[in-house]
Amino acid sequence: NAGVTQTPKFQVLKTGQSMTLQCAQDMNHEYMSWYRQDPGMGLRLIHYSVGAGITDQGEVPNGYNVSRSTTEDFPLRLLSAAPSQTSVYFCASSARWEARSAEAFFGQGTRLTVV
Amino acid sequence: ILNVEQSPQSLHVQEGDSTNFTCSFPSSNFYALHWYRWETAKSPEALFVMTLNGDEKKKGRISATLNTKEGYSYLYIKGSQPEDSATYLCAFGGSNDYKLSFGAGTTVTVRA
Image 1 (cartoon, chains in turn brown, cyan):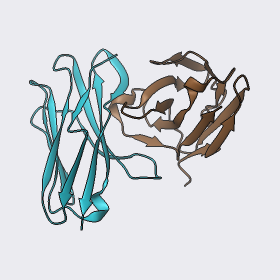
Image 2 (tube, rainbow over the protein chains, first blue to last red):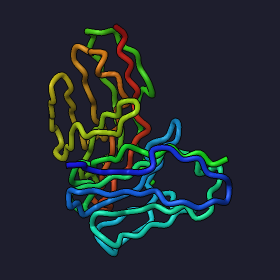
Image 3 (cartoon, chains in turn red, blue):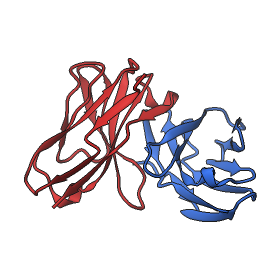
Image 4 (cartoon, each protein chain N blue to C red):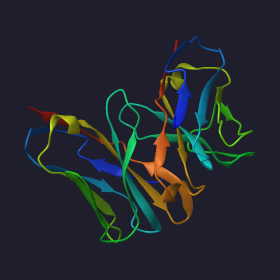
């Protein structure tokens, strides 16, 4: 059972470039989400999904897009990378669409640097 | 944006000593409080999900208590070991929002 698989682990982008962070889970979880982790701050929610075809914005959505075409996959797209998007990104999933009710399972993280 | 505070930001503890730290959250509209352990170069892993006032949970040498009326939770580590070195995150879930709001974490370093 792989759990939550997140790729790549490291990425360096130039300002203005676009890219997609991949996230897949094999636990048939309803809820999937993307967070960013910056020094001294908690995990901040970027976007989330409560099921296939349903996505919504979190706390810091600007500059990012998501889609949820299948239960398993939840990619995060950076449209035009900016240095302010340098961060560590985590994908997470929960068994229930109410994320508050069930423990979150996290991917390994992606360390993104925008130069 | 909910205010979830963790204190202290970091602490050092001698191997064998016990320690505890705090997560503060809004006392109104409480639904659940999560604790996660995040070891360096790994991903956060769930320790506890707590929903009832007065709830106490235990996993090995780590335990947690919950006071929803005053809005805080304590995490205790008994007889700290080097493998307990990690950042401990708490996350609050409110009754009017099914998402989680995370604190910034408490980083524990256990010295041998």
